[in-house]
Every structure is written in structure tokens, then in C-alpha cells.
Amino acid sequence: MLRDVVTLFSAIADEVGAALRTNADWGPSGVRAGQYSVDLVADEICLAAIAASGFSVLSEESGLTLCGDRPMVIVDPLDGSTNASQGVPWFATSLCLADDDGLAVALVRNQATGVTYSAVRGEGAWLDGTRLQSSSCTTLADAFVGLSGMPPANLGWRQFRAFGASALDLCLVAAGVLDGFVDCSVDAHGVWDYAAATLICAEAGAHVVDGPGRELLVRDPAMKRTPVAGATRALLEQLVAARRTFT
Image 1 (cartoon, one colour):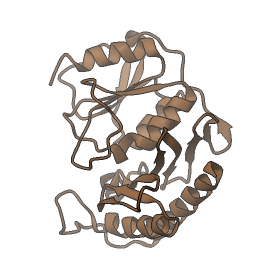
Image 2: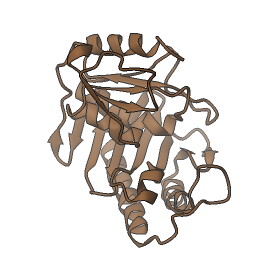
Image 3: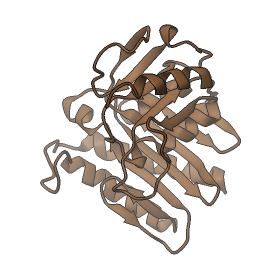
Image 4: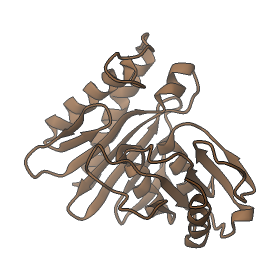
């Protein structure tokens, strides 16, 4: 059954990608600040496919839609929409199935390149058929770290990058490209930004937590979090400690 969900998610990402390739309107939606018209196009595609499959859904663009007590798909139809609007090839569709046991199936598709990260609980994480393994970095001074938001200063890492799409950024931690990720903003990320990548990281051996230590995987669309990821537990602890030095 879970493998069938991977197929479903891939089909949804295919359809969103096709819509993005023909999209001509990269302007604001006029519905809420920071939302683009194309976000709503992508959301309609995701909602229709998820509803047809009988799942509940929690979407960044349309909130919570329950289908009885069915498992929930947490979706960001277009993560990194500002990148997409500016022609920066780093934006994604992110989908994650959550059931009574937690995160079960995840898929993150880079819609600019077609690169796809996926994971099934207990079965590993994959990049287009290649199994993922996070890096073995244990020391902050050696770490190559992805950021969201602006830190007040260098917090001790070797180097950093800011790419602008957190779902994909976290997948780079799973892939061993980045050693860690730190959200330097304050509660700016909804669960749709990191749910799928959290499972992908976990199945690749990496760890994702909320910087202040709260429950990360919430189902209330109003609750925002500050994700921090580390390729190893030792590095995660150092990154969390660094993040807690400022607010």
C-alpha cells in the first residue's frame, strides 16, 4: 500500500510540473501576502488527486481538509515559489503521508530539474533510484550548512549556503551534500515545508528537530516551527545549541 502512495505522489508531481512548464502568470494571487497565482494552480492539482485517493490533506495553500479518519497527506504544492518566479532552478513539490504511526511516505520533486527524493518508512530514502546516506560529519567547525533566514553572525560552521526552498535544502542533508540545515528565522516554516524531507532525512540517517525543542510534526496549519537538521546526532546537537544563541 505504501509503495502505491509513492506512485500517486510521483503522478501528482508530474502533473504539477507540466502545469509549471506552461504557466505564464508568475504574479501574486491577490488572496494572501506572499502567495503567487501559480501556487493556487499547483494546489488545485494536488487537492484533486489527493481527494480522489480518499486521503485527508493539509496544504500550505488551502489548509486542512479532513476525509473522516483517513491518513493525511501534508503537501506544499510549490515550495520555493519565489525562486520559481525569478527563474532560480530550486523549487519543489513536497508530499508526505502521515498515518497513526507517524510519517509514512515522502516525495520531494525538484520541479526545475526533475530530480526526485523519496522515502518509505523503514525502507530507506532514495534519489532517483540511488539509496541516500547522510554524511558522517560530527563537528560544527567542519560542517557545510544550509540556511534559511539571516543569522546574526557565523555560528562556527565551515561554510554555508542559502538556497531558498527548505524541502529541497533538507533533502541535501539526506543526500550528504549538506552536513546540516539551520532555520535562522523565527517560526517561519509550516509543517508542509519540512514533513516530507524529515522522513527522507530519517531514512538516510540524518535528524531533523525543532530548534526550540517543540513537537515538530504538528497538524495545525497555524503552528509554525524552526527546523534544524544534522547529518549525525553529534552535529545536530551543536547546530541546535548554535541556533539557541539568538532569537
